Image 1 (cartoon, rainbow over the protein chains, first blue to last red):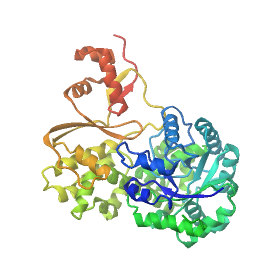
Image 2: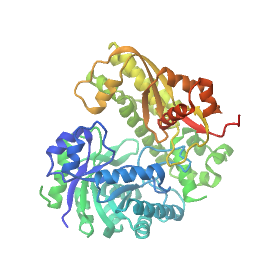
Image 3: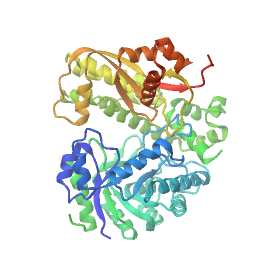
Image 4: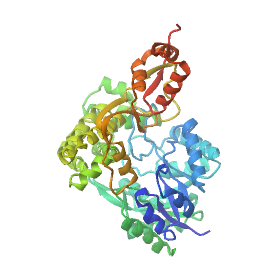
Length: 266
Length: 268
């Protein structure tokens, strides 16, 4: 099956994105289209759309209004699979939250919650569900499964596919003091449905590289290829840049870099 | 202690300067342990303190950067044309100091930061006849956003309606809502707003969206009548309105977060 190459839908670059149809085959939707978005109708006609919105953190069950929203978006996009992050961003009581992707602790109780709720969401959406692990920056001193074992068991027990963000994996490896290829090799690469590829950027607060919206460099592309060669179920590679500061130049550069590295001409 | 309770504790510590300070202090802290759990506090004390602090600063800076971009969108766009970007604030030592004392997401921290952002924007836009109103309106959006969220389908239930804490009425001399809408659409040139007394209701919905509605006299009378004690029927009688009409209005206001439901009213 041919692998699709795409990007995120950045509304401020809608016109340029439409002009790049062909270079870009699919668009990941991080936000619902604005009601007054003049381009969305044409975007919907010209691209395969992938649901990649915040549906809910799957340590909690998804139901009611949130599930209806997920169903509505999945239908609007006619998405071939729905994607969510393997993240936990708010406390159980909802009073404290971080407005940024943040991984869970890799414990048995949380694994059971994620497996149960992911299965329920997948069944409710009646389409494949892929989960994207989040990089681990801070490890706590307690016995845990570890990120690799957690994701292995999660995908095996939930039946979900994997969205491997190559930058995320490289960052988890770096902050764990492990080589990136060694880290990626240990992941359940046979579960990969989609790859996200982008460059990292230095962050002053974290004191090192972190998730960015830059075009991927050679090392990141090589790591993505390494994963792709071991992913028989791979269907899509997405340039993972979603930012109001993203420029057309970077958008084109990121997608072209992926196409060149993967030998997938437009 | 479970993985869930420990992760809850970690999120609380990452978003609370007070909890991080208590964690860093030596000796047991009853208040800290009451807030996050004794076992959880012990584990977090063993975490890499530098990385914990760095992660907290990263989360806080990102949190407020995103909100300035989103909620001061129009005034920021216009100020940038004049060479002023309020995001520069986030790289200044004064913001670092604010972060070191911040309760991320709280009304207090939002108020402190909003004042600084507004001052920066007014320096750039104050000469526009409607500049102050635009900054004031977006400042109201920013402050309203700092409120509790309902992440699932939970939330208050009951038959007593009350005005929610996040709702505020913005009284302006210029109707700047069209300027904000134009900027968010990406219009090349926002319109000059119409001049005239404008009252806007700003509220935070349970799922975290800030909504603006026209604050008509009837809406303001209804909100003023919600004392958190009387039932809908009692409120309707007090206002001389039909109960179905009041119910419908309250349901709409609850959707945008201007009204919340509590407890059960005493039977009349």
